[in-house]
Image 1 (cartoon, protein in one colour):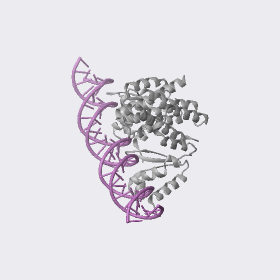
Image 2 (cartoon, each protein chain N blue to C red):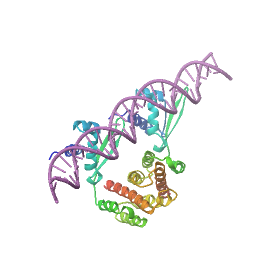
Image 3 (cartoon, chains in turn green, red, blue, yellow):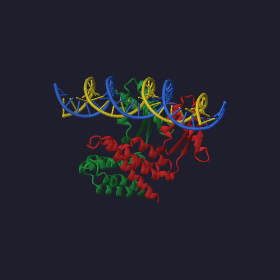
Image 4 (cartoon, each protein chain N blue to C red):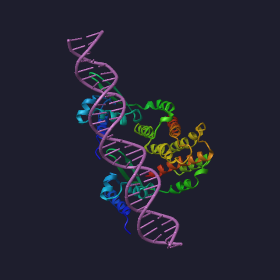
Length: 160
Length: 160
DNA sequence: CCCTCCCTTGACTATTATTGACTTTCCCCT
DNA sequence: AGGGGAAAGTCAATAATAGTCAAGGGAGGG
């Protein structure tokens, strides 16, 4: 069955395949024009087909001379951990993060120094927000989980 | 996709790179003339690309024989940044963090990969807490600032 | 037949760039 | 010392992009 999204996807894939560095820079409006569709259609295609789980990174800039840059990157075996985080958002305690970070270090997904940064962001920083008004345990766990999740996604993107 | 601001930015960067002391002195009007643009365009480029968050300091003088001096900030400016964070806790926006991280990378205080981790913790993660009950702008900025501050302190400790 | 999952669209929002009118500063000449 | 003119600064308006979100459509499965 015909699908505009599939068409656009194939078009972009072709462009990337033909690029020397697996990266292209386009304009959303121009592409939408070529395919005679709403500009937000491009966003849909990017979100569903060129996300990190499919091995792509998208960066963009708005405003005059704005652009959308799409890069192909390798993916690996960290993905199950991200899924786990999504499923256990509210119950990710400090000690869980500690365990995960240690594991990441042991597996050499991250360096010890990077581990220190992760601990700073997910443990130390969250111990200093007591004065703010968002300090319920569930909220803090959720927040911790999301920070950690984003870090993991970043690691995922960066591998090789 | 052409961008005058990007052009001017590159031009200035090139000048600074080619200077013996990481500092150049130009005239706003003359530069505007070279690029055939409004003089205030230069101010825009300076404000968005050569601010302290991106590791530059700009000084200037008006009037006869006025000038604009652009300096790359040396590495030992990192601690003042921490002080700045303390003083501007509620107004540290995403883009400020982005600029600071880019600067840390450029100065090789952190690796690009570490920069990605920091971005994940201070930008991406905080974009995903909208549903929680601590999503006022000031609170988010404060949280962002504290996470970033802890990471910075960690970087400092590791360097020494 | 109806439900669900994609897909598609468009209205609204956010961000970035560019320009020009007006303001401020301060060197230099008288 | 004072004023004129030559810088640079500020700010708001406009234009050019991209992003978000919610509502509607259609095809296929139960």
